[in-house]
Amino acid sequence: MSSMGLERAVDRWGVRVVRTQVGDRYVVEEMRRGGHAFGGEQSGHLVFLDHATTGDGTLAALQLLAVVCRQGKPLSELTRVFQPVPQTLLSCGVRARRPLEELPEVQRAIRGAEESLGREGRVVVRFSGTEPKVRILVEGPDRIRNDAHAREIADVLAAALG
Image 1 (cartoon, rainbow, N blue to C red):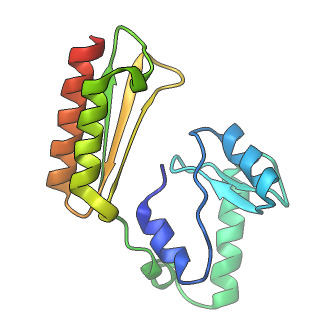
Image 2 (cartoon, rainbow, N blue to C red; image 1 turned 30 degrees about the horizontal axis):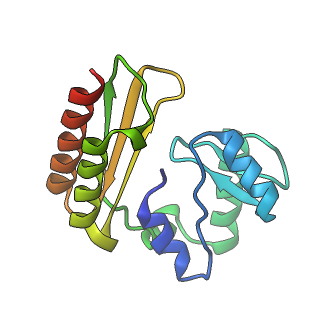
């Protein structure tokens, strides 16, 4: 669920972002499968597979400090390469848990948002792994539009799943 801004920032260095299901387990599986040394999640779990197999905040801080030292520039300057893309994240409580693919009205709402955003945005709708909720992420250049799309999807989900 990392920002599209990350993809845009690293693309200029020829780095490709690979997306997985949410969860360190899936990130590490893909890192091993693809031979990737670095992975992480928007939650801040950063995995440096050459050093550890789990997210480690201290290791991430030391790696960042090493980059700052090597570059000889302040962090504020180094982070200018990243322009975040506005995101809206909603959690919608549900009574029932049915595959989203079986809910045509939900699929229509998701497709409508995706078509409206085009290549400038994306929509991720998934069940929480720990709570009776659906997470709705809408990312695009306009926060107000993102909010409206997310709210529409949440309303359709609430009607479909209680």
